[in-house]
Image (tube, rainbow, N blue to C red; front, side, top):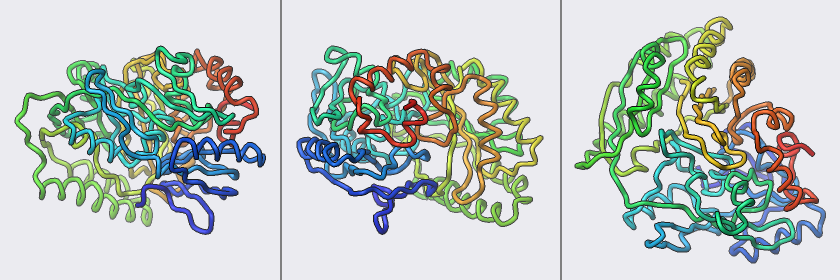
Length: 439
């Protein structure tokens, strides 16, 4: 896959293949000044503006019929400050390139999500996260931001400079301006030991609080139609490095997790009745393993099977009950679900529209392979999540609107007021923002 989602005949498509848009024009600015000029010209021409990253969102958050800004020329590290332990990076830099560059410098982010194809600005703007007991989303590791606003001016913000903008723009949904550079807190590179092992779902649910409390990063995958999960615990380690061997890595990460999994998805699509049997085999295919490596090699893994995803953050104390309800819904409904359900956590943070804003959270993600009808499953799951005041991931499928968000985000009005101030004419508006933030 190229770094940006495919565009043929002027049509832009996202990675999941469920969103398409036809922008009036596309711009790939090579500097902040060029980007600011493109924003001003769009306003003069009466066109809306959207910046797009790698198209990894499943919502239409980046879709526009106006000016589509592609940031692939705004890449690379601008500055490393070893005294402050920060790194400033251009907005279009893919997370993969940032992780590799930091590792070469002996540095690392504290926490990250499980894929690294996205651009840094796309990842933070939608609230991309991994799992962590104390360490939060990628956006929560930001120390400063540079933003081109609707009038074409360049704003910098941090805890000291424009703090009210900083509180919101770290997860800004593309509604406040176009992010051009991000300053992240970093730390000296460290080692993580990952322990992956199958565990019965009942045991995971009964012991969830201990598993969460005893590990820096705990997550698990539950295979619907089975009582099985695969758990993953990542904790800091004094070493030595013991990476996954080349053959084992290929066999487990490529052959089983991508190759066989893809084949199983095809069979499941052709013969839905076979899915429970496939799920039972899949859940037993992965055996326990341990390995120790630098963070990005432990946190992230390749995802070659294309899928569509919905993910909600619920209060952490509600996660076990929510999962039990989801399991009951799947069992009652006759749905055939061939993709595991992923469960992660995050501590409360202070970002206005972060899914973990002001509350310790657990994330439950449901997936369907690209091309299979997902509406029935996602609708049923969403009913369960919203009953617990769930907050959907901004880049993943959901049907919520501004009225709902005003109820589940105590600071929602703070964000919309700031948007009125920074983008009164709604230059950065699209259908998605109209729905989730209101007109």
